[in-house]
Image 1 (cartoon, helix red, strand yellow):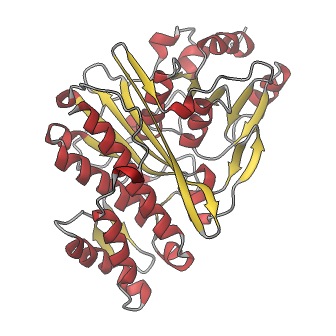
Image 2 (cartoon, one colour):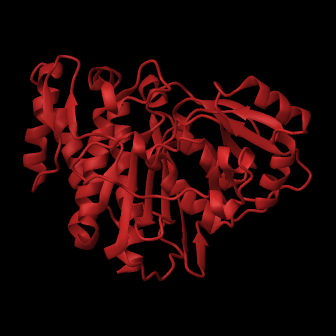
Length: 378
């Protein structure tokens, strides 16, 4: 049962990537299937915050596929988005995966029909991806560990499309430093994390990068995973590369991060790389392109960090509260992020799921100790 949850998460993450690619390849369609978030849905960091039909449909597909196969966890699958979606013309639907492809297509056509002048082809293609039975060869299933996770006490956080603004803009990826993308479709990720509801620890993470490589007009993705449960630490083989000892240390940050922080890091010998997308920046640390990801603001949420956090833990790293480590002097174990949910799976998420104190993501704990000496107020 434990191994099949990992297999299922890998498969549904690839299904999510397919949905994201189908919507993204139609420029006219994606501009119409966008909704601006308001009120509690909106991230206060952004002047405007958006979600697309891809966000909502991916989230509901993950809930459907995982919940139907693993009933022990069905009431504890949480996501960033509400499942109500309105297109730019005001058509509103509650997105739910139906019993079969035809019924799901009929539901989706409600929001697609008016913006496509009666053409339901887009709805039918999306429904096909939602109900597609992916083959094992469609997903890298090599060397998956034998797991025995206590699913009855686990929960799942989903960020269906992280870096939605980059997804909507559809721009080509632009490099920052050390093979890190500053912006563009390369910064878009699908984030899925399993956490223990008793301990609050993230134990299994899957990150899918739908727009990893491009072949003409066709995109291919990259999916990576990690598990840290008890004495077991295992991750995608591609994450196990050794860090280069002779290169300068790299810190990846948001472009809007405090200029003083960037200056102090550079003065300490760090290369500062700017990048979009919280999920992507954490992935850069997991892959070894960056040594640290620092965020001083409370602008990430549990759905942003749960999956990548589990992967980093599988590599001996983690994610801690920026404020509690650098300002309060807590040790890394005390300051490590914990996960939970104070609402039902059907209710809208709230600010209580925000990582209010900022975050530091890392693979090497010694670098965090060095960082404290560089940045802690004297």
